[in-house]
Amino acid sequence: MKKGLLFSCLVLATSVVQATPISLEYQGFYQRMKQMNKGNYSLIDIAFSVPKANGCLIEQGSITTEKRNYPLTISADQRLYIPFDETLKSERALINLQMKNDVTRCGVAMQIRAKSPSEHYSQPALNELATQMNELLKQMQGFPMKYFANDIAGLSIEFAGEAKVTLDDKVETVNGNYRLSSDAIASLESLSFSEVPKVISPWVTE
Image 1 (tube, one colour):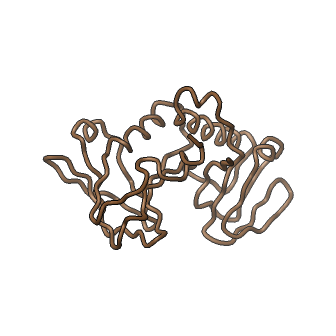
Image 2 (cartoon, rainbow, N blue to C red):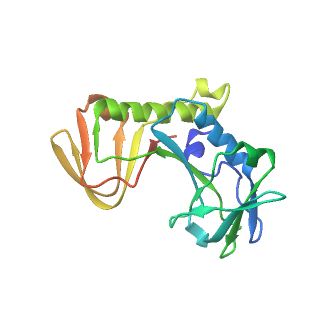
């Protein structure tokens, strides 16, 4: 299995082919969250979302069991805030999404990301963040592939728009995305931004 698929592509189902509305088994989400929660990953989180490409727009969502119906929080960028709950797993809960358009080309994406992005990082802090992301990605590969997987190439840093990045004494203006290699992380002293990044995630190469 390619590592890239684990952090940014369709990991819970290949692609959603049902007509609207659609239902996904909670268990698939639970297993991914369990892998993170059983490890020492205090700096990172897992985000599930439905990319808006191909007209994949969510109107509303819910979590249901045979006896109960719970609201599902969905952000403006269609991140699904799914709780980690043993009871929902044992009751075989479903994640229900009411889609606005045809969903035959839609899917659910999973991304490992920094839990609380900051405007400033020291070298040890960046190194620990990258280490936790790398270790979780390998755990998600499973046995025995995790022992043969390549390390991440570094960190991918996403901004809402234009931002200034200061690496030690060097200032650079970026528009949207900035990539920091593992070698750069190892050699820098500090990294700061003119605004808090929207997302910091693993930079994965094939």
